[in-house]
Length: 278
Image (cartoon, rainbow, N blue to C red; front, side, top):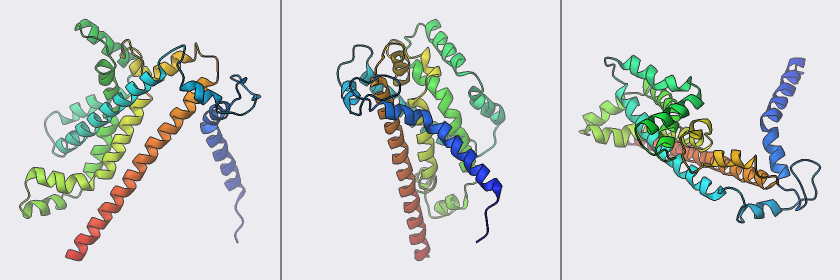
């Protein structure tokens, strides 16, 4: 067996340190959330228990954790659905060149390079000037779309640039209408990419802080609520909240990954059945 070079071990150690740096803070919060009833916010731990998780489900003296969670969840779903629909429509539209398409494309992705806090400030000012109420479901929704839509557009543009149009031509040859071609041919083929766009949309919205800071109105989303708790809550209950939020995020990612796997298997099975039919 060939001996590995020294560079392999150096890079392995470097990668291990990188993973530790990436997940170390999250693991630390997870460990401290299991402090005993007399424990604090730092090590050493004073026993091990689920006390602070039980406290999290009790009435809190400061903040509205579960209300903020519901708002973030609903807002994430709104942003996810809008991002998927608009991204698919834009991807279909940009398959053909039209006058001003380049300008429109760069305008759509410009918000990625603008500081998020400026986007939040600008959207909040526009709503105030128009006499509209600043609210998480209106101004907050719009400001978050400036963050999620560019990612969705870039993914869909890449997908449609390598999409084989012969599938659509075959469907039209069989008498399918334009809508039937999109529904029964295009959408099933790009389904894994749509799930990826949905994942981007939901996760980017769910943990967005800066673009929601000045556009959420009187009701906080979960990231804003957690930030507010850091200045008021002095017990490991905030660590328990962080642990549950992290587990929820990983659960969402796992569900989307499972959906991608199922969609891929279904597409492969359909392709195999079509090949046997030929």
